[in-house]
Every structure is written in C-alpha cells, then in structure tokens.
Length: 158
Image (cartoon, rainbow, N blue to C red; front, side, top):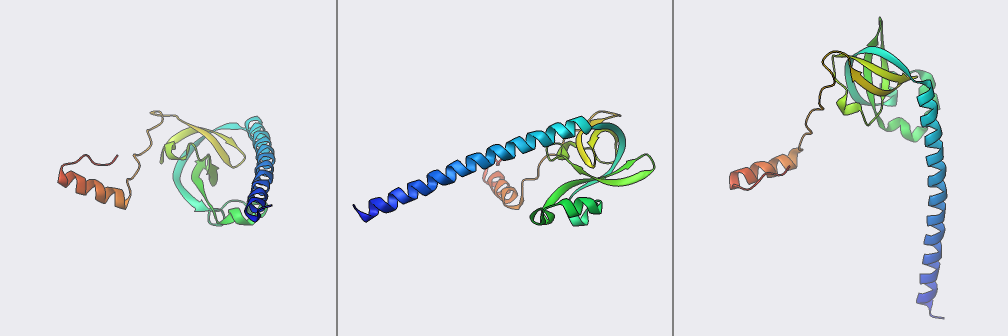
C-alpha cells in the first residue's frame, strides 16, 4: 500500500472519531442546558427593582456571594459577565443578567424583572416601557473608513 494512502486513511479515521465524540458531548451539554433552563423557569419570581448600574465585570470583582465564586470553574472566573447593580426594596445587590437582554436593560429606571436566584431572566419597564437599546458603536477603524468615504463622496459603512 501507498504510504500516502495510509496517512490519509488514518486522518479520516481520527476525524470521524472526533466528530462522533463531539456529537455525543454536544447532546449531553444540550440536555444539561435544557434541564437548567427548566429549573430556572420553575424557580423564577417577579420582582420590582431599580436598576442603578450595569457593567460587564469579572466574577471575582462583581461582589457576588462567595458560594457563587466557589462553585464557578476556574476557567470561567476570568471571563466577564453582564452584572446589574440593583436596589430591591431597601437592599442594594449585584445580580447576573441574561446576555440576551443585557443591552435592552434601562439604567436608572424602575423595572419589573423575573429573577431566579441571582440571575435576571427578563425585564419589563414599569414606567414608560422599555427603551430601545443604544445604537452600537462602529469602532475606531470603521469610523475612520466611514469618515474617509464621506469625504470621498462614497456611502459610509453601516
């Protein structure tokens, strides 16, 4: 047999095994996520709160309870989470926000939120409704290109 053919067959076998392993792991992770989502839905409560501030912070800088820090994997401790600083009644606390709704959360407004533990699932404005999220910044290079094209008379990037 040709040595190139043997190498090719070995590479195909390794890729096939890797694909099967990733499929199995993906199904397990999806099942685990669905279970966690169902548990969060069953435990959610509707709470009226004043949003003081919102930031993306590292877990150890966010002021979350120590039990949360201990149960977080070490690799995730360095990642940034969307954190809301809220006032619920007389108490000020930090809550973790869902990534999907973080941009639409109004700051310095009173909202009705669905909370599961320290996790904010959804937010609805009490007075005046929800505000539209702020337009995304273009970034330094896109802004420079847009300005250059405006001066040249071309359409700017969107």
